[in-house]
Structure formats: C-alpha cells, structure tokens
Amino acid sequence: MATVNAATWIGSISVLLWGTLALLTKLSGGEIPEFQLMAMTFGIAFLLMGGRWVLAGHTGVRYIRQPPVAWCIGIGGLFGYHFAYFKAMTLAPAVEVSLLAYLWPLLIVLLSALLPDERLRAQSVVGALVALVGCWLLISRNAGGFAWENLPGYLVALACALIWSSYSVLSRLVRSVPTDAVGWFCGVTALLALECHMLWEETVWPDGLMQWVGVVGLGLGPVGIAFFTWDYGVKHGNIQLLGTLAYSAPLISVVLLILAGYGEATVAVSSASVLIVIGSLIAGRAKHRGAQRQE
Image 1 (cartoon, one colour):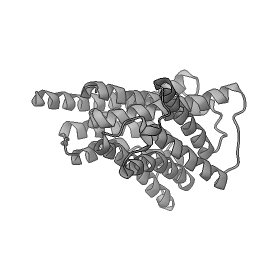
Image 2 (cartoon, rainbow, N blue to C red):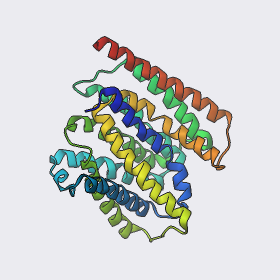
Image 3 (tube, rainbow, N blue to C red):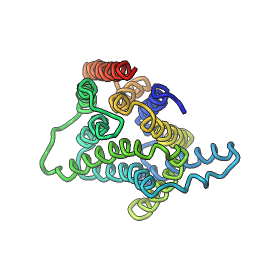
Image 4 (cartoon, helix red, strand yellow):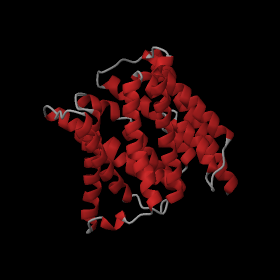
C-alpha cells in the first residue's frame, strides 16, 4: 500500500489527464454525439482495465463481487455525473454550466470534513476558494451572465458538482474495494450510455485517423487512467489537497489549447494561473502542517 503522499501524487495524475480533455475532444472532431462518445470512451476504459487483468493472468470476474453500496457509488458517480452534465448543457449555456459544475473540488474539501479520519482545515478552505476564483476567471471569459430562464439548467449543473464530489468523498468509505472494480463500473457506464445513445441520438463515427486518435486518447487518458488513479487517490491520499489541485485541470486545458494553436494567452489566463497556483500552495501548506502535527 502506498503512503498518503504517494497516493496523493497518484491521484494528481488524474488532474493532468483531465487537463487534456479539451484538446483531445477537439481532435475527435466535436461531431460525435455526447452519449455515443461516452459509450465509446468508457468502453475503451473497460478494455484498458481488461488488458491489465489479462496480463495478470485472470479475467477480472473476481472484482464484480463488491458490496451493493460500492456499485451504487461507482455507477452513480461515473454515469450520474456525465448524464447530468450533458442534460445541463441542453438547458443552459455551456459557460455557465461549466462554472457551476466546477464547484465540485470545493465541495470535496467541505464534504471531506464529514469523513471519520478527516477534519476541515481553514487553510484548505481558503486555498480551495482562491483556486475557485482563478478557475471561474478562466472559464467566465466568454460568459454572457446568469439568466433566470436558465434556472433548470443551473440546478442540474449544481447537481453535477454534488454528484461528483459525493462520489469522490463516499469512495473513501469503501476504500477496501480495489481500484480494479472501477473497470467494471466503466463497463456498465458504457452500456448505459450506449442505451441513451440508441434512444436519443444518431450515430456519427469518427472521420479520419486524427479523430480516432482523439477518441482513443480520451478513452485511455481522461476517461480511462484518470478515473483509476482518481479512485486510488481519493481512497488513500489527501482528499482535501486533491480537491484543490483539481482546479488546475481547466488551466492545463487552456494552456494545451494555446500551445496547439486553438487559443491565445490573455491577461485572464495569466491571472487565473497565478490564483490557481496560490490556492494550491495554500492548500498544500495546510496539508503539510497537518502532517507535522500528526508526527
């Protein structure tokens, strides 16, 4: 079993991979319907974990036998979050939905205080709030302002934040469930997404090698490895620090898009970068002091 620090570093890999989400989505062409893309990428994630099982000399069937509560948390988090997010996008502008949905890192910091082995540190909250301001500054560059007619979409977006933060925190209560089980959660999520696709969408396949690279990249990285490392991180690492570090994902996304020629550096991007880094340092300092007291 890795130490708390090592588990936190493993969990932070997810943040880096989620930072590639926007670029890989651009490469995938942006024409594939949401639930179809969800089914394809979660299917790839399941196959990725399946490859690990084959290399280990078994089929992974042993990991199906998990407590019902673990299955509810896993499917509720993976499928529930994405279903609510896509629904919110149909009810409200994308920028406002992103602003509200990205409250989940702050909620992780707050909700983690309810866990038996955690307590809420003032510096963790301050760090998360500073990073949140940076994140909102980054996302809200093209915001048109909140409007009451979009209230249903805003509420569903808030549900996104609550679902993912709850999934992350509740996973701590089933830390005995191995990360390999997340492979099965991804498989079931892929099937549920496929059913939604067949009910509500028309099939659009990737056009050309680059779009397939984008889809496969999504399945291997932001949807595949990222969910596996996040599961391990929130179960065994510093969950409050991971919550604050998660605000780096949209910053990484913007930087990668700029480097790839899909955007340009602005004062808002620079300011957001500084705030997110400061917030992460504050939260990291809180974690360091907490560890010193425990020693």
